[in-house]
Image (cartoon, rainbow over all chains, first blue to last red; front, side):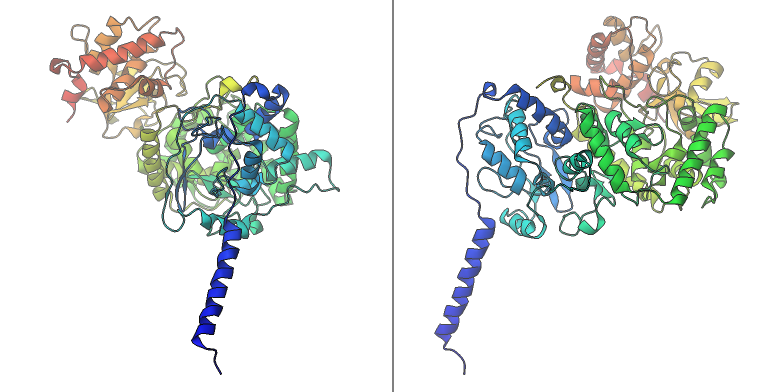
Length: 470
Length: 165
C-alpha cells in the first residue's frame, strides 16, 4: 500500500519546509541597529589604554593593516587554500569601518563571527578563539578601536569560488567547529597559568598559526599546537613535538616573546616577528603568563632531548669562547645523518658568507645565533631557512632588533640549495630535507610577488605612534 | 686562480674562493670606491652591482661570482665623464663625509635600471639597507630623482649597459 501522490508531495514539501526553517534558523542572524558614531571622548581613557594592550596581544594590527597602509584600515590579502580573503576596516569610519557599530555588535562579531548587518564572517577572522574573550575585554577592545583615527577604506571583494562565496555556508562551518562557552578556568592551576591559558586560547589565538588545519580549514583538536602553515612560513610545533634543538622553558619563552630573541634559540622572524613586536608593548605580567602556560603545553622534555639540548648549548658556548672551527659541531650532533663534509660548495659558502656573523662572539640580536641552536635548521621543512637566506632579517625602525642581509641577489638557486643542505647536515641531528630545490623556487616566486606588491619595508612595525598611550 | 669580470674586463685573481669580493676589489684591483663599513652586510657601504642587482660585496665570496658581471662605481663613469647617478649626487651635494655614498649610488643605480621612475616610497624601501650617519638622506632622495631625469637624455645612458655582453 502506497500513499497517494498528493500525500507524498505533501510529505516532501513538509520536510523541505522544515529543513528550510532549520536552515534559516542556523544561518540567519538579525542586523543590529546602527548607532551614531560615538565620540572618542565618550570612552574612559583607562579602558582605551587596556584595549590598546589587548589589541597588541591579539595582534590585530598585523592582519588589519596593509603594508604601508593606515593602521587597522584593513585590505590585507590573506591567502587561504580556498581563495584570498581581504581583512576588513576596523577603524571607526562610519561608512567603511565599524563607526556605526554599537558595542553589542562588536561583541557579537568577536564571539560568533557575525557582522553588524547579520552577515557571517569568514573564519580567517579567528573567532573560534575570540569567542573565549571576556565581555570586559571586548569592551576595552571596542573602546580602543573606536578611538583610532577613522580611515575611509572600502572593503575589497574576496576571491572565493562558489559555494564558498556564499556567506551562509559559514554557518555550517560554525555548527561543526565553533564552540561557544568562553574560557573555563582550571581551579587546580595557578591564577597566572589560567591567565596565560585564557590569553593563548583566546585573544592571542596562537593556535591559528601553530595548529594544523583540517580539509575544511578548521584547527584539528587532535593536533593542537603541532605546527601549521602561515604566509609561506612554517609555524613550528609548540607542544611536545617542538623541533627546537634546546627545549623551551618559561624563562626562555618569556625572553623570546618579550624582546624577540632568546640566546638559546635565536630570533623571531617572518610572521612571528610582528607578534613579538606587539608583545614588547604590553604588560610584562601577561607575557609571563603566556610563557608559563605555553611551557606547560610544551611539557617536560624527554631525557634524550634534554641531553641533546645540553650538548648543543655547551658546544655553542665553547665555540663562542674559543672560536673553534667546524668539527666541534658534529660532536654535539652525535650521529650526523648525512655526510655534510662532502658538500664543498655549501661549506665554502657557509664559511665565507655566514660564519662571520654566526660564529662571532657577538651577542644576539646583532650577532647571528649559533646555527646549532636554530630551530629553522632542525625543523621539518626548509621553508623558514630558505626565506631567511633569501630575504634576510630587516631591522625594525626604532627598535633593538636583529638584522641579517638577504642573499637572494648574490646566490643562485643551486648555491642556496647546496648551502641549505650543508647547514641541515652540519647543524641538526635530523635527516636531510627533501625537495629543497622546489622550496627555493617557490620562495623566490613568493618573494618576487611580495616585492611587487609591497611599497614599504618588509617588516613594518606595529604602529609605533600608538605605543606610548591610548 | 679565477677569472673575475669587473666593469667589463676580465681579471685573473689569485685569491681563495672564500675571499670576500670587497677585499679583491680594493686590495688586488685597487678599485676603492666600495668601502669596508661593518664587514657583516649590515651597513651597505660595500654595495656593488652583480648582474644588475645590488649586492653586499663584503659578504659575497668569490666562489659565488663565477661567470657573473661585477660593476663598481668606477665602472659607471669617470671624473671627466661622470655617469648620471654620479652627476646627480654631485649636483645635489648629497655627500657629507661620503663614506656611504658609493654604496648608495650603486644601490640607486640598480634601482633605476629596473625602474627608471621610482617613487619616494620605492627609493626609501630600496635604499633601506644602506646606512648614512651624517643624515644627508633628503639630498640622497633628491639625487636619485635627479639621476632618473638625467638618464632620460640618451647621451647619459650608463656605461654599465654598454659593457654588458
